[in-house]
Length: 58
Image (cartoon, rainbow, N blue to C red):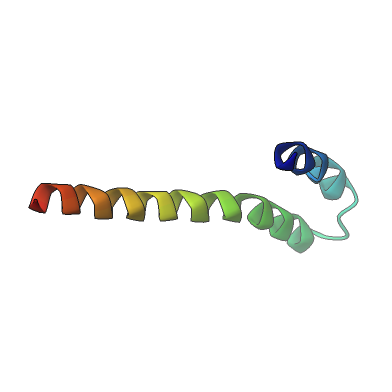
């Protein structure tokens, strides 16, 4: 059910870009779209690196 809601709530980035009042808004939309993915990748790498070091020390 959560997966369905995730896809329904996806914003239409192209539409937001067309309706943007200026270029600063477009930059904010791009950053806001990619930032959650970048944060998740960083968190995944930190967890991976932590577990790898813990496994090597045993």
